[in-house]
Image (cartoon, rainbow, N blue to C red):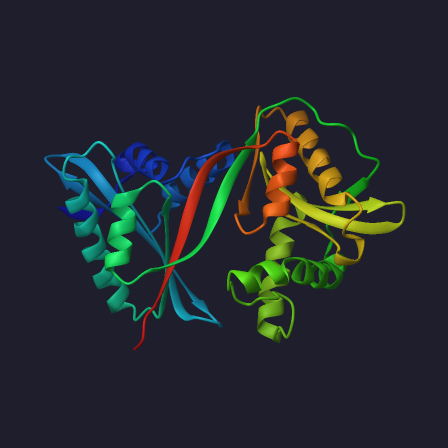
Length: 292
């Protein structure tokens, strides 16, 4: 039987998310809050025991149209796991059809061959891979950079630099828009500006003297959106920003610092490994473009 989840299901749903991909402390807290508020999850139940679940998140994308991200998970020890995954997909597919979605993305651990087979049979194509990396050591060498929190006055300069910094990567793996700032219409800019307002207390700008050299977000013990201002690349600022972020996370009392990186970015992965980060998961992302 497939049904909506209840509050009593939350511990097992968290376990199912963990089967899909390892959850770090910040991700776990965010997931618990979302589940308590209510999100679009259906669970598969047999004889009173949860076997699996799917989560369908939907939005309107200027680039892809009506879009969705599907996450399907079933407990790895199930003898009938393949059948449970298929049943969950069939139910999710009817929801996808009802909502007339035009673009769909999904993900699975690289070693999860059951999900790999399920998605390939349903016309998903491999897109890109993301490595989860974790640092569990002590403090790193101090940099000589100064930092401050983002303010609304930084919006234009921040997004122009961020757009340029990530454009090559986004173009190579075809994540649209390739430049998040370039040719942005008024509505897109309003959305981006609101997002930055919401993240202002977690976003740090780093300076060498009077020169702004880069930025990073620190979300609990996760480091995200780390970039070097394009005109300042090649001077070691990425490493120094990362060192400062790790030290700040340690000062906050976390045992580990973690981040995610697209496997296309070999240079960044090499730097992370040199500083002591280790891979803990390799997630494959897939996509399906639906013609209507």
